[in-house]
Image (cartoon, rainbow, N blue to C red):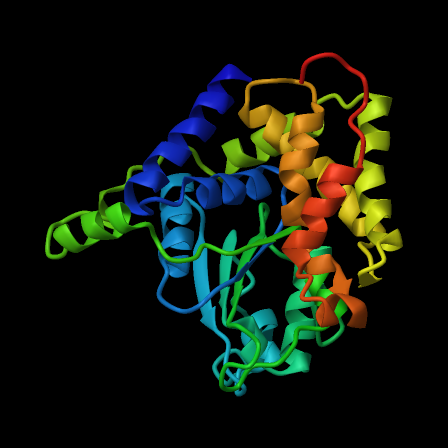
Amino acid sequence: MQDNLESARETLRQVNQVILGKEKAVKEVMLAFLANGHILLEDIPGVGKTTLALCFSRVMELDYKRVQFTPDVMPSDLTGFSIYRREEEKFVYQQGSVFCNLLLADEINRTSPKTQSALLEAMEERRVTVEGVTRKVPAPFLVIATQNPVGSAGTQYLPEAQMDRFMITMTMGYPDFESELSMAKAVGESRGVDLLRPVLNKERLLEMQREVQRVFIKDEIYRYLLEFVTATRKHPYLERGASPRATIALVEMARAAAFLEGRNYVTPADVREQFPYVAAHRIQENRAARMEGMGKEQIIQQILKQVRQPSMGKD
């Protein structure tokens, strides 16, 4: 475990050399990868989302592809299609973009629901069905999807079913002043993704994911994390609470957080830290919340304060 732990931490160090001032966001991406989950980045253009995906693909030696989602992107662009080859006198299957280890689905909320559904199958099932034939995508298969703020030109809401398939959601936001100053001074210098060196490969990542699955969780912790999820279903300002898939995601992210801290057991702190990332895209405010100006972040903070921590000594 120690070798894999050091590799995971070195991965963070490498990526943080390029993505300045976003250590927390980089860590959450790493945790989602360790938990074998997909990530939704809700942000404005130009804050480094593409660079973030490129950095991880380089340091982890993952087969990386990027799809710019526009209204004319077809499901076959993702899943693949068959083309007739005259010299062979038969149809030959051509793989689509999902046949990779890390897919950056850029501006996912600009494409059609049909194309989103094609991506949904690959995300959930880790396979695609084309012309009646089912094919598995490579392992690991991880998606970093970005969506522009709703209301931007050409955007639409993602279906609830697809939102629920993402393990976590987060916002990178603007860099702090000092980090952006460092970026400005480095313009023209040879630094960035090209200078990153591989730290691990996909086989090592799969091994690390298996180690994360073996991290121990006590019954009290299971109850503790479930209380967070069920609290979203009873909150007076929420029209829709988190689904059971949120419970599974919280278990997996808490295990990954413990692993990255060098522990083989989950603490209440792991659960509290990961709950906002797991819950934010799975809850929906009601009219009362909107009238009183209660946003998701405020509601989540309320729940964090309301749920009582189990008596387990120091976490």
